[in-house]
Image 1 (spheres, helix red, strand yellow):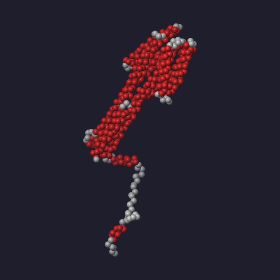
Image 2 (cartoon, helix red, strand yellow):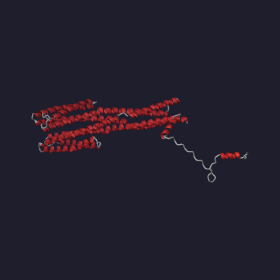
Image 3 (cartoon, helix red, strand yellow):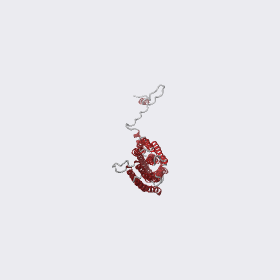
Image 4 (cartoon, one colour):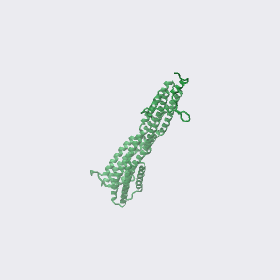
Length: 475
C-alpha cells in the first residue's frame, strides 16, 4: 500500500503534541514547572550552615569567615572592656565622692553629739549662769549634727539600714535637747533637780543617740568597703577576651605569611597593635587603681577609723569626768562599789591610749605622726590632772576639784581641748591622704572606657581592611 508523498510529514505532525491555541489564534503559554520545596526540617539556620560549609571549601570564603571572626572578637573586646571599666570607675568615684564622705559625716555626727553632751555637762558645772562660750559650742554641735543628718538622709537609700538610724537620730535628738534645756532652767534657779535632768539627758545620749550614730557609721563604712572592693576587682572577662582576640590575630598573620610569604599585613598589624594597646592600658590602669586604693586604705581609711575611735574615746572620757562631779557619787556601778562615771572615764581613757598607739603605727610620715604624738602627750597630762582633781574631791574639797576640771589654767578641760585639737589635725591630714590616693585611683580609669571602645572599632576596621586586601587578589 502506498502513501501520499507528504505522509511522513503528516505522521510526524500527528506524533507531536499540538500547542493549544487561545482565542485570536495566539498559542497559549506553557504552565511553569512547580518549584521544589526545601526538604522538610531545613530552616534558615540549616541553610546558613550549609552556605557556611560551602564557603569554607574555598580560600576566599575562608578569608571572609576569618575577617568576620576577627572583627567580632576585637569589637567585643573593646565593648566588654568599656562596660567593665565603666562599672569599676563608677565604684572608684563613689569611694571618693559618696561612700567615704558619708562615712566621715557619720563619724562627725557621732563626734558632734558626744561633744554636745560633754559641753552641756561642762556648762552645768560652771555655775548657775552658763558661760556664753560653752553655750555657743553646744549650739554649734547640735546644729552640725542636724545639718549632717539632713545631708546623710538626702544621699541614703530610704530602705537602707542607714535610713533607719537617721530616722532614730532625728526622733531622739529633740528629746535630748529638751532634757538639757530643763536641766539648764533648773540649774539657773539653783534647784538640785537640774543635775537629775542632766543625768537623764546623758542617759538618753548614751543609750539611744550615740548607739544609733555608731550603727550609722558602721553601715556607711561597710558601704565604703563594698565600693572599694568593687573598684579594685580585676576585669577578668575583658582580659580573657583581649588575650583571645590577640591570639587569633597572631594566628591569622602567621597563616597569611605561610600562604603568601608576606611578612606584614598592614590591616591585621593595625588590629593587633590596637588590641595590644588596649590590653596594656587595661592592665596598667587597674594596677595603678589597685595600688592607689591599697594606699588609700592603709594610709588613710584605716588611720581615719582609728583616729575617729580615739576622738570618740576622748569625748566620752570628758563627759564621764564631768558627770562624776555632777552626780557626786549618786550613780554607782552594778556591783555598787564604785562610781559609775569614774569607772567609765577610766575605760574610755584606756581606749584612747590603745587607739593612739595604733594611729602612731599607721602614720606613714612625720606630718601624720606629729599630731598623734602631741595628742598622746596631752592625754598623759590629762590623766595626771584628773588624779589631782579626784584626790581633792575625795578629800571633800569639791570647789578645788571643780577648779581642776573646768578651770581656765592647768585643768583637765584644757588638756581635753588640746587632745581634741591634735586629733583634729591628725584627722585632717589622713583625710587629705585618703582623698589624694582614692582620687588618683579614680583618675586612672577615667579615660579607659572611651579609649577601649575607640580602639576596638579601629582594630575591627583594620582587621576587615587586612582581609579585604587578601580577597582583592582573587578577583
